[in-house]
Length: 67
Image (cartoon, rainbow, N blue to C red; front, side, top):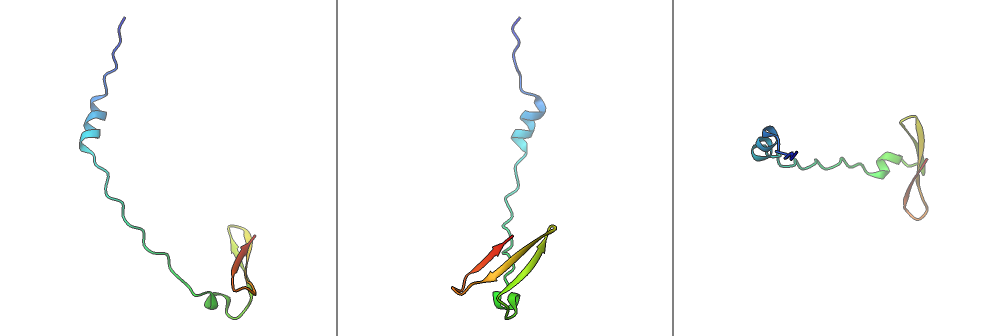
């Protein structure tokens, strides 16, 4: 017995007539100055999702975020 696989009429109609909308550009991420965030301190703790993270401003003027 020979069985042929015909594409579903619904799938062929959808593939011919449905077009995906153009991607919407993402809004730029908000920006905050590290001096405002740290307020003169060298480190601060950030709570996120039940965890505590430490943001440190190093002597080499870098920021390090650790868990």
